[in-house]
Image 1 (tube, one colour):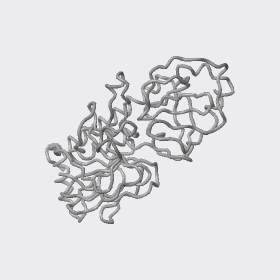
Image 2: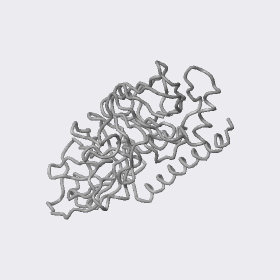
Image 3: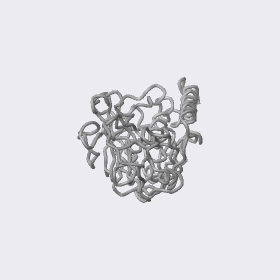
Image 4: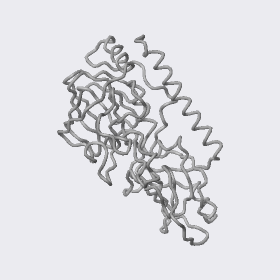
Length: 336
């Protein structure tokens, strides 16, 4: 099975959950910017959560289907439609052969994830199908997808087939599911979210006025932001005194402070080490909120303890496990 790309959108790439096992070799972790949306999209079509999906940023692609295919769109709302019929975000749908899925401009968030039953079947590079644009590997020839690309799909799981059969019985030219991902699985996207921040290795080196500004002022997402990092504009932050550091490991969500005083939050395609002071770490549960921001949006920060951040993370994983169990109970044996 395969789909044909009619229009590529602004930047549409193949992504999964990345290459965390190869960071010790200097290979960026990469993967989906909004991992919760990526995982939920896969759940909705009966895929393994690590299956490869399309990540569409700001303006989405148009895709023609060669065969009837189960899909789901999650994350930011790019006004998806199937032959003109609106496809709500966080819903699964059965797309007939010959139909066209169109994603437009972002109205909420900025990144949508399109999961296909069976996942996108492109070669694995360092145990991942994710596209790493800076080094031009992974995905479709290491690049964003283009009009005219034909993208292969994997073999749907038995649960995917049961979900598809259920939707086929619901009638209608386009089989959009009447059920969807629950509210607890959907991040509260906003153009000015409050993101929780743990202390970083060098938070204590911030001057007191800078530490206060970090948690009281809002920061604008710079136009120079990308999948590697988000540069934040606002009143410059500073340390009590200049320091020289050896490069050390950084993570998805590490906030660095370069000499100019504009913090940078490292994102999915970050480097593996960095030598700037690390003044914070975005709580994992809030990474989707910042991943869905576009240049010109704002973000605020509030402090959180490690214990509270871990508790929120475990609660999120429990919600995903509950959703997975519910879908398996409902569809694994073909019951509806």
